[in-house]
Image 1: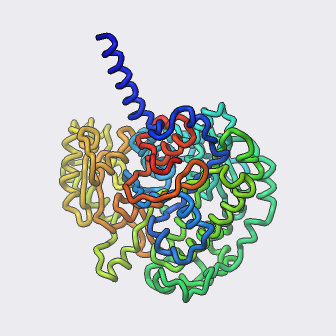
Image 2: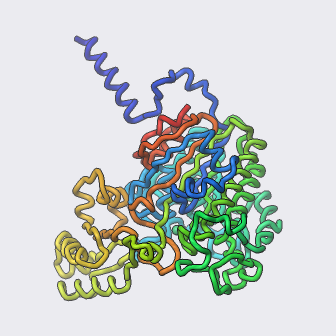
Image 3: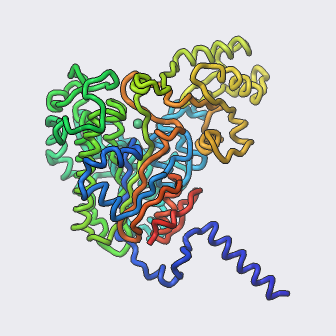
Length: 555
Ligand SMILES: [Zn+2]
């Protein structure tokens, strides 16, 4: 009897290990796992605003050494989806690296209304720290609002802090969140009249020599040149006409059409900041990433290092020119060359077979609604100012107070709790009244109260996406969702943030040490990425991870 009980216990324990660990791979014994060499360097690449279809739409323009090398010699998860709302840069980078969603990591948006301080806060702003490497105020940054550990944190702990972790991106949040809390450094680009890579005193008090050397060079200045199409513009058959009504363009140039003389335009577009909105922002990111590999000697010893790169320029270009523009086609043709340059350098500096790369995005983007309307696909613009006025009028009429609404932001309504207590109002009643009122508004497709979000479990549909993006402490009292392809945005350019496929479907490529060749159309979620890297490195999962390792990609 005792023996049977023991056997059952063993079976249960084994099952539990499989469920929670997921690290145990059926075809390999623990011994040969131990022997499997670990990559000397993991390079995580996030492309800001890269839709999955950019891999296929521009396929005929890509060379063999960039995206195609990752696809052909690596593993392509062709149906990888973001599994929460809102699909923004801050939450996106946090989710890629923590394997969980805003519900747990707490990065509910880029900026959000803070219920405690009654102010808007920025996801990586931190007044406890000082800018390093700039005379501006823009470097007061830390990842501390992210409440869970990242795969990069887990690597640091697993190597007793010997494995180095560096985060690099033009945007501070795209560098700081991926690098995690225990990173050696995160660097981002300060444009304006400086044009330097900077950091914050969260990481260090002074820039390392190699960063100073890079900033002292004229590499950033060298990109003040003309941006024209990489190939003859007549061959750009995968995008709309260059001149149309759906694009923004730059200050100082009448039409949003090639070529763009950046040396001339920089004076009308915040100096070095204009580079962010051109493909040269990607080049500058690769330049700096390669300097980091050299300067920090990444991938040189037996402890795995991690370089987290995010290419921010595609997002700026998408916001300005839209998904269907010649400018988007050009930035991806050029980014393909940058990926090739990066891989070639990794081959020579770290060695083919010694490193592992993944490539994904932080969110996708919607086609410009005005363009969709022109081809009769349902799409529109939401008038947020009118909505705000109407909601306030409703509340005033119903409860006799105009200041019950504290904030309407990120498709959430925040109520004034103390005012409600004063008026003796019931929270659930007010939330439900507002839900029932706003669902009648044009282009509001769904609305839910915070009480519903925290008391009912949704396992699929838009409700599940909202729930995974809902943080009980930080999110608002009422959440609402627009109709498909309806955005609160200007009439030119693309944006993102929804739970629709155009925003949630992103590339996910793995390549290199420990990665199989192949592809799958099976659905994976963005939260599976970090656990997959944890399994590859045989280290702990990020502490809040909800995803599972993608077994098919692991060798
Ligand atoms: Zn964006």
